[in-house]
Image 1 (cartoon, rainbow, N blue to C red):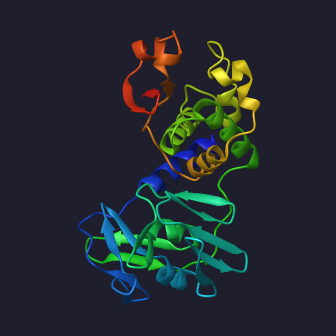
Image 2: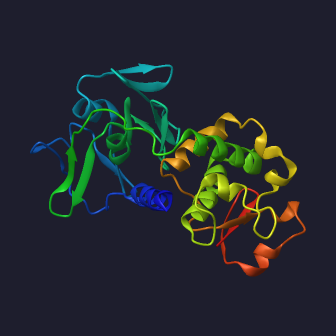
Length: 266
């Protein structure tokens, strides 16, 4: 049951964003760095200058711009963020940025919560005080999943959604993790994938494609979803209606959304 609690905790952390009513205050050790950090709201998410805030969270690092990406490097730390991509990488982890890394006026902007997560800091918000950033370790913590979890998650995502967009891959991974968190299904990623209650649950297990080497984007999607990214809400099932004659899910479960060729249900 520990993995169920861990997955639920990651999902809640990934959903946290700063309310749009937040004051223009970014407090660090009592100083307001909102302007210096070029902070701005994108939707309900506070974006900040990667260079400025990385310097606060990890002052012993260097920030460079190389081949279209911003890099933060220090002892035991390598972080990269490329404008337009929906993630940043830190060491062997990948953290999801739904609205993407942004480049504005020559400044690379990323969500402050994601950057704090990557560099061991903490972000708090209140209507009265605005955003408070507390530096911590200045380093990324260990990935909150095992190599075995990553191995199988990448393979089921690749086998089920090789031709789907990144969001579709995240949605397939979300279904697996929703099942892990549900009392109706097994308690581990491996056992969910190879669950044989009422027959094989996933076609790639039956036809053997789950054992194929996963695509690079599928590995990325697996890392993202295992580190808290979610898509397709609380879905427990998905189906590609045009590729199957078995429409039991469509007839018996509640529709959630469609992403690519997959329809998702709970």
